[in-house]
Length: 206
Image 1 (tube, one colour):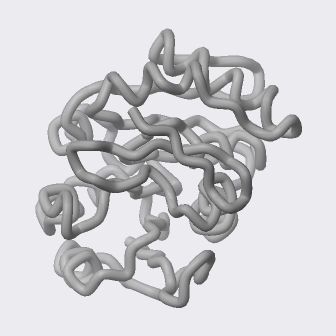
Image 2 (cartoon, one colour):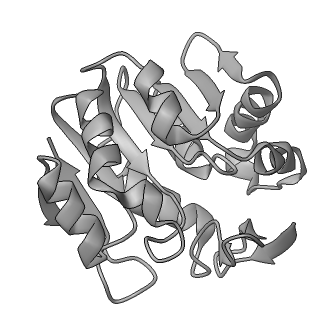
């Protein structure tokens, strides 16, 4: 898998199947904090669903910000294995070790955080989760153009069932099809922060 160094010096990878990187080239770790953890107002005690866990940067941003219970959905065992080869900035290394342990054992727990990774097609594994249980969803598949099946109305409806009333879903994309399908699934859609590009990200509330 091709390694890519982004503008904030953090690394990501390019997926050959989808011909896309797992993160924006303007800054992989920056994106995780600015488009996911911060706009979702991550705080102690929150339960977070990380859809398309990848190399775990979004969950990393969450556990670096607060003590949370995170559940990651990921279909690609190869990218989970690559986590062991990822280097992060010094100030994040202690927390990323928790991500590495979770990737290896599929779970990690200490007195502050809990991480569980479920391997499989997210459209199916999401159905295993408890309804009305998540405070925030980090939604980070490949683009709607390359991976339309994960931006479908039906999948958004299944995710909505797992969210508490008033919970927020954050995603990097503002594509029309993504926002239209979120609205059809019952979400209220707003602009999220613009980081690394002109167009905004998306915040959706249930």
